[in-house]
Amino acid sequence: MWRDALLIAAKDLKIELRSKVTMNQILPFAFVVLIVFAFALDTSPGTLEKVAPGLFWLAVLFSSIFSVDRAVAIETDDGAGDGLLVYGVDPGGIFLGKVLSVFVQLFLLEIFLLLGVVVLYGPKIGGLPLMVVSAFFATLGLCAAGVTYSQLATGSRAKQTLLPLLLVPVASPVLLAGTKAWQDAFSSATLLGDPWLRLLIVFAVVYLALGAIFFGSILEG
Amino acid sequence: MGSLVSFKNVIVISGNFPILTGLDFEAGPGEIVLVKGRNGAGKTSLLRAVAGLARITRGSANVLGVDIAANPADVRHRIGLLGHESFLYEDLSARENVRFVLKATRSDPSNAEAAMASVGLTGRLADLKVAKMSAGQRKKVALAALLAREPELWLLDEPHASLDSWTRGVLDATLNAKVSRGATVLLVSHESHHGSLVPTRIVEVGGGKIISDTNATKPVPLDPPAAAKQGSGNVA
Image (cartoon, rainbow over all chains, first blue to last red; front, side):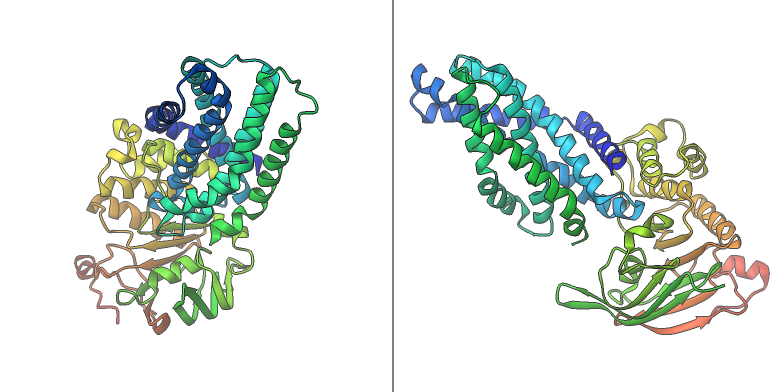
């Protein structure tokens, strides 16, 4: 399973390097979300500083919808997903490979996005260990849930609208916990004992396990 | 030797629509079975069911000694499917696609170059992104991946479509060689000419069932010029 996961992740990342969808389309979209929400809210520095973690994770959540959709769409074009089944690739490996590939892309996107948040909203960044670890598990959870629900929506003719409808409510604990963990980090809370980080870890582990177990059944339809 | 494919009363349902309706079918080693039938008869569904890509609702389905309905993952990697979809990634080159298939199937990666060269995918063409290729060139990439894998059971859905005559000849010669060594080919085709491929049986599918099964005891090429050279008649 792990060998197949690495094979799929390497292939997907190579495809992303060629197509540059994340860099040329999803990242600019995430910045647009940051800017538009800043306009929609009170633009005074105090307000933006306060809501910066929430807007960051909202932009990441919206971006993740496009990323997981793209990751699964790679396999629906020209029947490539059926090809993987015929080649005998482990479905759990396909799932983990997709999660790994989207994770790498989203984590890189978050680094750029954080720079944007600092420039646009000017929050005082603190508690870096808690920020990094919570971002790691929040992203992992978003990727695991996203790939699962994106594959689930693949059979539908209304996939583009069905996926956000499924994923946004499911991923709302990540949005909430990610925001709270970063607010804790900004107020210099320590890594150990943060309850929101624990929620992010549980979410990521549960969806990774569920995806690895049930992805095969979803893939087989 | 026993059957490599043994379907008994197989039912496959897609949505609410039965696409295979109690199909009985057998194929043994060294056979080239030509599957014929009208559009929507169930030919492609038969190939997908044999490949373990269609959920078998009822009946007994054995492929290469494995119950394909219960354990499709145990046997799929021994099956080669060339269908309407090429299973290729548009942003990867021909070479990258073929190498990926070989890695995924745990096949010998050194087979890639020879297989690509055998269908004319050499030089810059081998490194061209599939997205920039013509339909025929894409078919060659899919074919190269299949040739490099060397499956035991070949499921070919209109394999000659989009291919030039030279590549058709390569495919036919390769398949004839594989079959002589015990491989089995299920060939779906609407074409009346199949080059030098010599079906040993012709089955006709209609309404999701086999409606005729003709055993060609004296196999003859279906290609009229080739048949004329050998002085053979027509296959019934």
